[in-house]
Length: 465
Image 1 (spheres, rainbow, N blue to C red):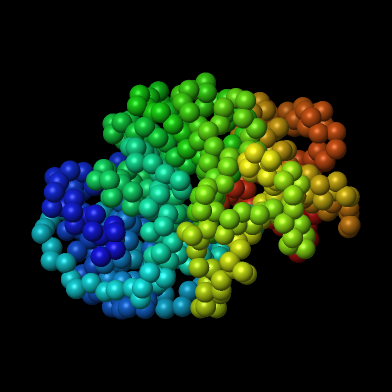
Image 2: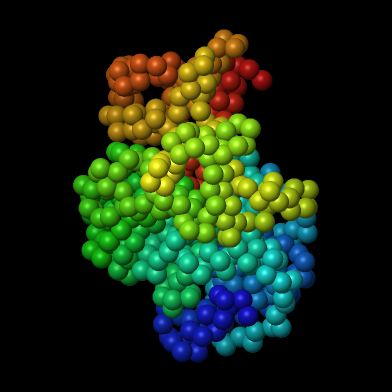
């Protein structure tokens, strides 16, 4: 039996009245969760799902976790479309539609569990994970049972460590899925939230969370809500970050509001956890720690040859928990020689620490001068009246690239003052154009889609088709 189902069966027998899922509006005990999974499995069979098919889900987190477990029982692969703005861009063979009819699971029972299905061995793909990099173009990574079990076997190295936590990223991500699975393994409630708001954070406070997990953008939003609504998390011990490097402004904000340890996890949907580090005021923000023992990581030059420690190049790695590849035209295409290229640049120190140096695809080549747009974002962050911002590339004159800054701000925000600040901090590579917009397009982990900003600027400002 697949591990999450075995854990559910065990807890439903040993502690049937203990809470298994808690949302801001309802909760389920382990016995009720087992009944809800049985009812969902029966409903899926009634809808005509069969082995070899793929079920796409777009559900609130609590309901999705119930259906996820039902699909595991039936031996069916799944993909979560939660948070995907343009679902028409996703193409899958054997798609059985969205299980949108499943709302808050009922608690009446007991329900008989229908006969289960099976996956074809440990390398069978049980879930497709959507990943978009920095461009916003979705890709589907094929996640096998073997990779899942490896990551779960040492969960603390990849994400969760067993303490009560609130994970702000959803089940559509590996972090969110593993947080739910770890809660089931440990027999503690999974806090299933769909919004970063006062209700979710009050739920976290009632359940005494000790760890708050999410991307830097998500954690920043949570702390802002806590501050505005006077919500405290008295048991909080740690904030765990992933998806992007935190700015010094965010680290200062964490220190001034909750004053807890900050742990940054470097990795990817494709490879899982690669390294971790506890951040302090003295830590180099680009230092993401030592590489995990089972991870084979190299820094390579443009020809793919490994370079010496201290030399910057492209990062590539292979891990036992790596996905099997990307789904392309119905076929899973593995990574070349097993190496996953995350698109990051970096270097290894003589002590074995990995130090990041920006994204390959994001580096702005301004007439031979390469600029990391994240540095522009970090300097701009916290400027009076600035709500959000992201740097991107433009070409107002053919062949002459420039850096631009998209800003979401109050009317009183002094963009001339922001320009002076950036020119002072970055004499070379500062933005030469500022564009006020209503919102920055970002991924589910808060990464800005800089390519989308470039395209929108061409269309809206430069009037190019």
